[in-house]
Length: 432
Ligand SMILES: Cc1cc2nc3c(=O)[nH]c(=O)nc-3n(C[C@H](O)[C@H](O)[C@H](O)COP(=O)(O)OP(=O)(O)OC[C@H]3O[C@@H](n4cnc5c(N)ncnc54)[C@H](O)[C@@H]3O)c2cc1C
Image (cartoon, rainbow, N blue to C red; front, side):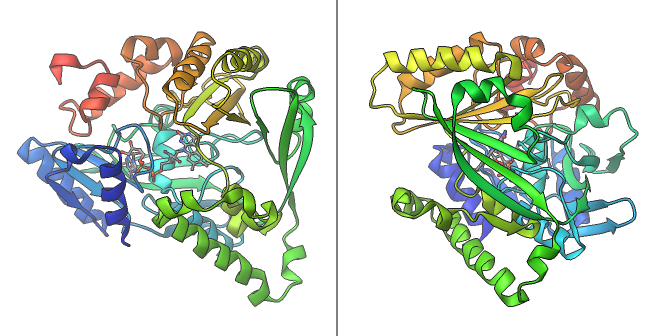
């Protein structure tokens, strides 16, 4: 199944058939992207860009045109001396990791899934690439874009606009290339242990000493499961024959891709019957880093809040969920991110906890109750989730919101890159 069919299916599964765009273009070269944007500018129409279309909020909907970048892929330049790679924005994260590994490089950050595109993950501030992880800031050091008139522009690491433009929700232009800071490729070792919620909340710094940490809590009791990942020198892997080294990883990679293409089949697989070690390896080369997160789900709700508020918020959440119907079993996943300087980063200005909630039932009551708990704590909803915030409350949640809105208006005064949902988010009302 082609990536384009996949995006179409995903959009229609989300009830967006009435938003089928008038045209869908899948450019393979830069000039084609420029031509599509210039045509939209001339004809007064609108364009949204889609990477892989995973975002749940209706960000990729557009009645006019959709640019789908699944053919605009690959690593374009590598500066091995400074450890910088420029990647085309349609590249899937899993492919990017394999490409970087062939240069002996990997991203310094962990925790990103494999099926998303580089452009989508950066534009939306996805954990581990658009934002940083618990130990490193975002690896993005530069952006290249096609602006609203079809011309090219770049934002480099010393440009003060980088902090405004890094997470743009696709509203500043078509992101064509992303410059990524890399580190030498390593081997990754994952461990799952049991722990206690009270200790996890008390010992945040000790947990963050690992190269990566996430933990799972079932919203009652004190038991949690903690996953830590640590980097090891890559030569440990190199002692194994190459075919063996990559064989298992490739089979697993193929299985995940089938699961991605056939989500309904995947839902029917009784995951609990599959041993955890078969679902997620406990040791991989950084070329396959994303496989360590293959069983992680975005969940049905996702919020970011300062680490200092995590304990009180989780206790309040546990209390509210216990008061609801107990059939709604909820799993809470917590990860940490460094304070970020990107204007629209969920981790802007504070050491942050990313909290994802997954419920066994798609329950409105549970979502509303949990949403209220997080909103009262001043948490920022993750951009990929639909939410009901508008410009005024977003300006309170994001101190540099107005600066971002001004930059957006300066680069795209007509709103060529907006759709109804985003016009609402930016409070454009009738002006749109
Ligand atoms: C395990 C897991 C963890 C996740 N963690 C997070 C998380 O921490 N935070 C979060 O927000 N989401 C998260 N998600 C959701 C999902 O990963 C992100 O929404 C994802 O990055 C989207 O990638 P995509 O290629 O599908 O982007 P799309 O859905 O195709 O696009 C996302 C947005 O980026 C824009 N865009 C895409 N490509 C470009 C481009 N080239 N130029 C300009 N704009 C572009 C689109 O218009 C849209 O607004 C997670 C998902 C999973 C499975």
